[in-house]
Length: 78
Image 1 (cartoon, rainbow, N blue to C red):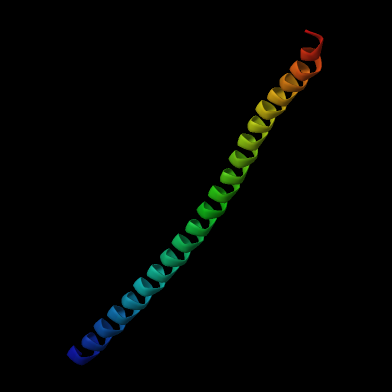
Image 2 (image 1 turned 180 degrees about the vertical axis):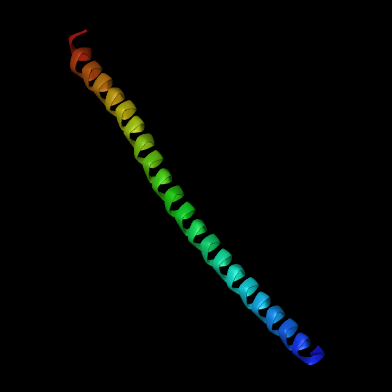
């Protein structure tokens, strides 16, 4: 009887260790997936912001070029 109890105890401990290892591996895999997802989202946001900054700068440059062109066009008349 005592020997059966010890065997059962060892089996339960082994199962618990295996289950804990499986949970740990799943948690690591989930964490890795979350990191990859977060990196992709950050890249998308950085690209979106870069486009927005470029668009704003383009408008500023375009406005300056337009004003300069206008001044060059009318300045000879003065």
